[in-house]
Length: 426
Image (cartoon, rainbow, N blue to C red):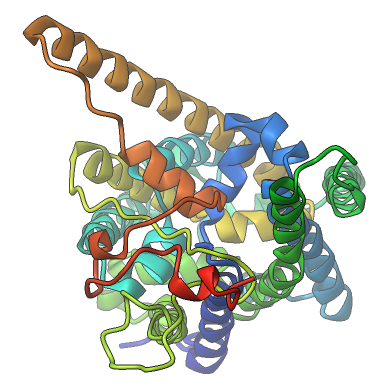
């Protein structure tokens, strides 16, 4: 039996908007919508993210994302309120410890596994990547497991859950709202500086063209951020009862299971899959209008890594555990941080960043260990490809990608397309 709070219409429409956000970044900029990678870049490469023109689109995305969230909540003050609480129906309330552990696991897992519900779920599965399908199965499995094990009749409940009466302690305060506004203002200022930046007089024509190209990414990113913010709020993926209503398998037995999340994923995948039909090398439906390069750029930045390896499996399993513990993945957590929710802004996100840093340390150690082993056997070490593929997908760096190596698509020519050579690609 399905919960009376099941909302297929808003879930589907919200999912369509999330998919439209991913499609906008892909078709116009050639980038992948990856919330975990976008946020993780602020601690992995902070100077580059805040000052390099290639990261301008991220700053524009986040600044407008914040504005849209604030505007949405201003118009509908109850948009982020859990209807279960308003109606006196039980809903899990995550404890401070739950937010800390959840943020750490999500940060570490998404960085190690190179993606989250948007990167692997909405974008990866849409291009029929086997790697992403495995990732989604992993994090959905452990998400269901951890959410079910943290239910009110579990021995873990006292550690990761709080009483519904304590929910007022976790709502936005004047201080946290002000803090989120300051952070957003600094990001917006960095974006404005980037937009106003001019190439030095001695810069080559190639450098000037690259700067103009980076600036062209800003407008599509602003549009994508608007779709993403509205889609997340409208679909109610920021509300705990919607997440736990899907992940907690006890709902099947007591009639409280809420499949809204499935509608969100279906809506997002539909639009994202349609967008890939206009990208040459990924279209499974024959399309003479498929693009060899994005509308504003010279090449697509889509991951080519096909490896189903330990990092992927372990990372996504850990991500799922954190998702089930705290009920948050990066996208919804961005919304709640913008709104000033205390535990999200002060506990979940700091621990997310700690997890990202730890995962980067693990990856570097893996590279060093591999190089040492190669030296011992006298072989030349091969360059590490997994982190590079992640950086292309999640940070939007523009790199040349061989279409014949793309998972989920047909063989094609190089992403530096013929149209670009002829001037058709900007």
